[in-house]
Length: 171
Image (cartoon, rainbow, N blue to C red; front, side):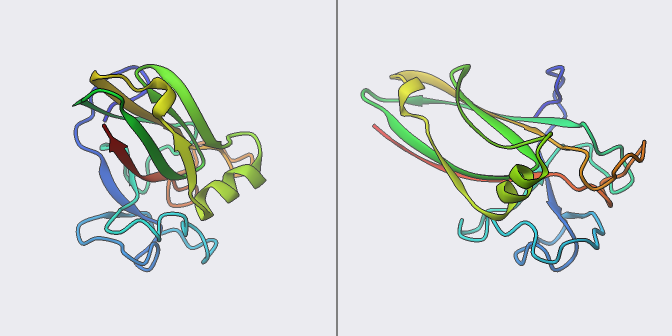
């Protein structure tokens, strides 16, 4: 996991809106203490054992918007690879396979798109950018300003951020 400048921040942090959301909030996760929408972050509920994650340096009182988090994994695939990713995000994410954009979800300028992105899964086809040999999948997430209005210095407890995803690769 790295920041927008490519600086490694270490392993991603498990994050939860509050102790009840998402319903599978793992022990040891960072709990934002968010008291807003009680129906938020439903998008990852259908991914078995998946947890919402965010930047390794996240704190409930940290500056929330417009923070960026980059999650990346490199692996080898055999010939004829295919793959998909299911993703949900608060507020925006773009998915890359081998540095080629293969799809995005949510928004940092449209609150309806951002809200929808956290409450449902979007499936992204990775196949067009996969190849035999080494492949890198990158998810770039960004938090929008929605929980804070015009307030400067808004914290994650008022404007949470996270992403949850899973994928399937075949070759």
